[in-house]
Image (cartoon, helix red, strand yellow):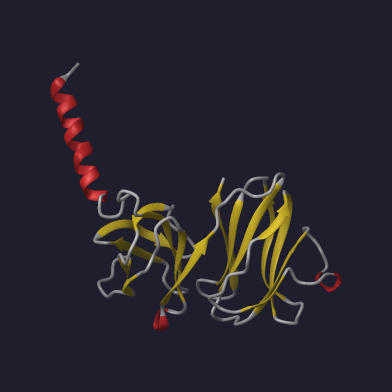
Length: 227
């Protein structure tokens, strides 16, 4: 064994451990969290949690992976990539044993945080669980249709009704297969957001986030929560 290389490897491992200790597991007082850039107009941001960088150049509509975080009130700072003025500089309240998705959302002139408690328990056999989030400030309150691809919306009722901006639906239990997700204004049938055909497998948990387009229009992102 090369003892010099072994010593350097151990030292590197210790350094990495010390770097992430402030956000990594803290005994039994830990939780899981991820951060999403959902603020239209912010094409790329840097994210710091409790003084440790967890994402650099996080693109619009993208989210970090889940990470182990010490529960309590960690500080969250979000800055435009290449900028110096904070978009967000707040503490977030998170409880031990829970899982969270934290969205930096709304237009940059009024950016804020939406903190969602996730349920990543296993779906029923042969099914997936899907949650819908309305993070599109330009739409306001929406209805959401989760249907077979190509379905005429005039022939079906919405899967989720009256979903306000910054709100999340309950989890829908769906048979594994192909789906298309449409966002309309409440009580209307015109689809402002069309996810296109999406394939989902049994055992998955997914969060579908409706968003303003980065410059115009609207779009959606599908986040992989489990499997």
